[in-house]
Each structure stands twice: as C-alpha cells, then as structure tokens.
Image (tube, rainbow, N blue to C red; front, side):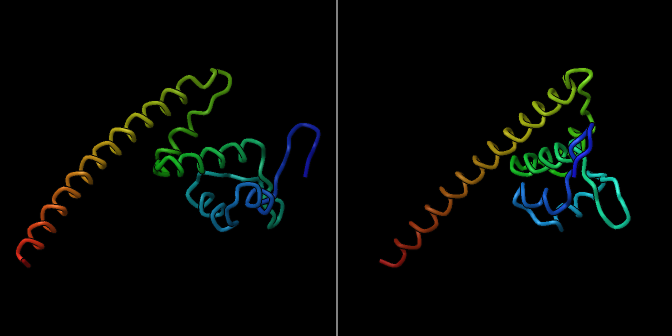
Length: 126
C-alpha cells in the first residue's frame, strides 16, 4: 500500500519483514506502543509505525522493558536531531550494562558456591 507522501504497511507485511507474528504486533498496539490508522478492520501502518516497531524489537533484543522502549520512542523528534532520545538510549544502555555485570558477578559467585558444594559432596562420598 503506498501513496505519494508515505509508505504504508499491512500488519502481515510488517510481521513478515521482522519475523514476528501478527499477534505480537497487536500486543504492542494494546500496550499503546503502536497506533496504526484503521480503514474498517484493516490496520494501516505508516513509516513511523514501522520505525517504532523496529525500535521496540531492538529494545527487546537488548533486554529493555516495554516501558523503557516506550520512553525512548516517545522522545522521537527528528526536528531536534533526536538528541534527547539518543541520550536516553545511551543512559538506558549504561543501566542495562551495569545490571548485566552485576548479574554476571552473581552467577560467577553462584558457580563457585556450586563447585565448592559439589567438591564437599564428592569428598564425603570417599
């Protein structure tokens, strides 16, 4: 679907392009992350909707919550060069990295504890 000023997409074409289900796209709509135009029962997605879906899926891959993705998407403002959006994204990346480092430290500590418990069990068996 196209017109002279924008490219439009159907739900099935977006699902196919991004390798997700139409149900996933409808879920993001229910959460208020996407707002396609409707013509009867047909959803018409704009180029902006497509970009927002791309950002949602990128955020998901990076482990962001839907609320974090929503905050970043809501800051989209090409007239300003998206400086605030990009800074928020950088801050969210830093927060996620910090959390993952802490989780990695926790996992490494647990692995040591498991190794020690296994070692004691093996010693008790001999």
